[in-house]
Length: 187
Image 1 (cartoon, helix red, strand yellow):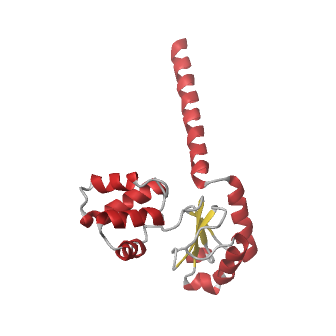
Image 2 (cartoon, rainbow, N blue to C red):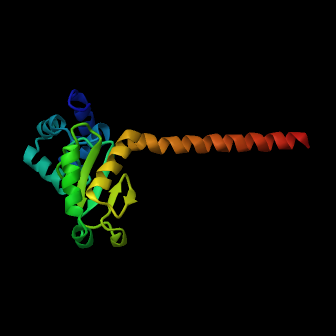
Image 3 (tube, rainbow, N blue to C red):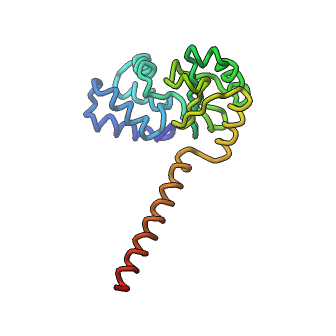
């Protein structure tokens, strides 16, 4: 799918018996397959359902769960709440945007970061605070924020970083099970 196959959109529409009232679940399915809502698929959806493209884009831009651009390897949420802003979040935002060629709500050209300044993350004691891949980083300055993001980018995509510890845990569990089994054989 994803900008090269129209039959996948037709399959999704068939799944919902062509019912235009099921537009949101259809869009969720497209996003699930592509990671975002590509323009080609939305045009195809519009044509096959007979729903104006403007209505589809209206739905896509209304719900924050829909993305019109591919998501980066890492997500950056910079708190722009009052306390964070007063402590320099605006300068951090400028530095991040300049260093990684980002604009709010977009993904960097290299696909490493998706940047979203947000109203408040509820961690005022850490101000200014940035949440990267769900992890809070506080007391930042423009230089330290940029340095942190470079370090994160070098580590690789967030989903790969999450898989590594899980594999280690499984290995540790296997070793413990083998040790236990060996101990019970001796008795």
